[in-house]
Image (tube, rainbow, N blue to C red):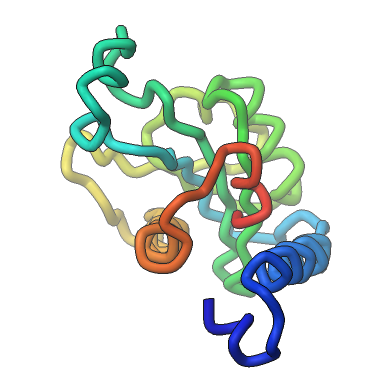
Length: 170
């Protein structure tokens, strides 16, 4: 960490300070976005292929097992992002997140995830499974770019983010 060298403290102190700074920034704007707003979710965690044989033998399911879900919202007008670690990507959880982060009259853009069906805002989707990524103004490329930068920081700077502390990084 460059911070500990620049200000002359231990790495542990610098890590502690950075988490407190991130915590202070996280409450900067808790108001819902006016829109248009993009919503998407991602998963953070190790790949099955990178786990030891002993760890792989304990995994019974496929896909996102042992990964942590994060949902995010990006306001296209202000380029601000609100993101949150969630326990599951079920309909009640995602609908609550949309309700908390988008004004009732905001236009909401998502992918084809069925958990977003039934949200009260004007809602348009793109179908990634059919290779549809943009349909005029309908896309979620902004929030996906945020996930890309977040994951690059994970691999390049932080290396290991424990689920216990993941919300602080988000």
